[in-house]
Length: 241
Image 1 (spheres, rainbow, N blue to C red):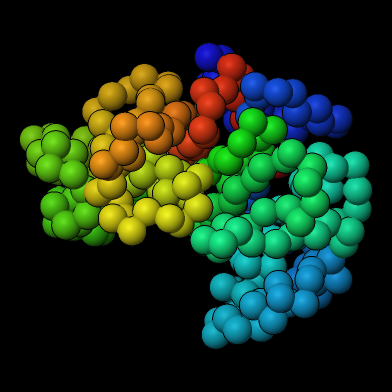
Image 2 (image 1 turned 90 degrees about the horizontal axis):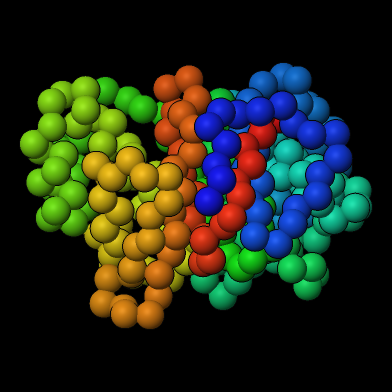
């Protein structure tokens, strides 16, 4: 598998081949169309969701992130943003209403959004800002597997934080790829945060047939990220949008 080791310049033309995954990291700043203009492309459901945010910065972040999603989907589909039609799976996972063969997923923090695209089945992505102001060991003991929490407990302070967030983004990527159908939550999959390999194959708890392939993405300014796919990708391209 060939994975980009850094976030590269966005291409002028995008061709997503079978076996390839494209991942985009986009800063949610004022360079993106303002909230009013972006909503023109939204569905009624998206527009209603945007109005429910109590704080303006949360609403702006939602609008910008979802407009970028529509803009990128339109680029892959050869369409315009307002023509992109979205629906949801039975588990609530967003997907394209058309049978285009294109799968996508999105994750965002307060200032950046991560988008993954594949033509080889379901995909999940997650990005988190690494923070030192939380009790990582308590959370690991509560939500992670025994082996994961033990590994984190045996590390030094800085390494403990890195291992915790490595595990978190890997787990969330798998959960999002699965589509929200894992009732057991984060402990349903062991992602071996101490394993630095670019590609990991992890089974779901209690299943001998369901596996996900987890790719660790390049770090970016205090953020860690990962993606999960049903089939192991042969190439992962990482673009900074």
